[in-house]
Image (cartoon, rainbow, N blue to C red; front, side, top):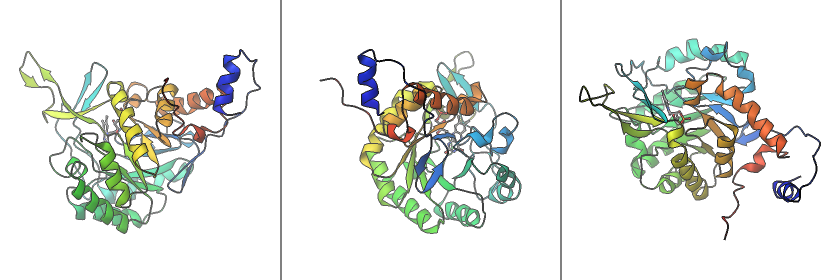
Amino acid sequence: MNWTSWRMRKASGGGKFPAVKPDMKVSLAGIELANPVIAASGTFGYGIEFEEIVSLERLGGFVTKGISLEPMAGHPPPRLIHTAAGMLNAIGLQNVGVKDYLEKKLPPMKRYPQCKVIVNVFGYTVSEYLGVIGQLNQAEGIAAYELNVSCPNVHAGGMAFGADPSCLEDLVAQAKAASRRPLIVKLSPNVTSIAEMAQVAAHAGADALSLVNTFLAMAIDVEERKPKLTNVTGGLSGPAIKPIALRMVYEAARAVSIPVLGMGGIVTAQDAVEFLLAGATAVQVGTASYADPRATERLVRELEQWCKSRQVERVASLTGALEAPRA
Ligand SMILES: Cc1cc2nc3c(=O)[nH]c(=O)nc-3n(C[C@H](O)[C@H](O)[C@H](O)COP(=O)(O)O)c2cc1C
């Protein structure tokens, strides 16, 4: 039964349907995911730290925190602040560097082959990005790379690439040529036209896009008359950004023919379905894991339940299935 006939049956007061187990698989740039729920970069460590908390084998996948050529210490604290409906962070891409990642963090993830490992790649220069990709290419057990061209809280690299179309094109083309795996490009939302940046990345060879990263933002302590973050500005995430993120996913998905991974403030199954209807093939869950470390696994369960209760036989059928507004 498809969505329209389910709605017609519901509207006519139709009776109950036998529960079907929905097909939750999605396919993304040649990668098969058991379901469309992926833990977002920077909010799920290197994955393995969550093995005691989350049934990793139940997730479609997870994205590592940004991995750079050399280890990075990140910004000094305070670097995480709660805001009215979200979180402001200026972690500054703290990570162990690609060598340690490959030696110590990646190998234990082989215990969970169903949970696809996507490595988030960061650099200050094109050659640093290529250096990370070159080392990752030597390893097994990685499904794809996610190129972070969108970090709003480092002073060079990151967002500087994502905000300039010609820098973005050059970086994506070179990264694609260097990569032996599907290349997902994580776009910056801190741009005027997300559709234009999506098209630039797609034409340069991206296999998929992910969006959104955090929005450049700031908070002030009025008693101290000082910025709350040592870095002054940071990236806003969580429910506060969801409507903007959804609009951007919608615009990007309409502008390109490659798959889009949608994220920004997803907490419930309904949130996830909104992103799928807007055009996302899969969703990522970030800040929600801070409030509830099991949020990703809960989302897998609730999304399946949502599909079951609406007689949606294939979750993939929701992608882009947004109907026209009422005339
Ligand atoms: C503490 C923190 C660290 C993050 N680190 C990274 C990172 O290293 N690389 C990256 O591409 N995105 C990073 N992000 C962005 C998230 O992956 C995600 O794009 C963003 O937070 C929006 O999703 P959410 O509202 O569900 O958190 C980080 C977000 C947070 C909150």
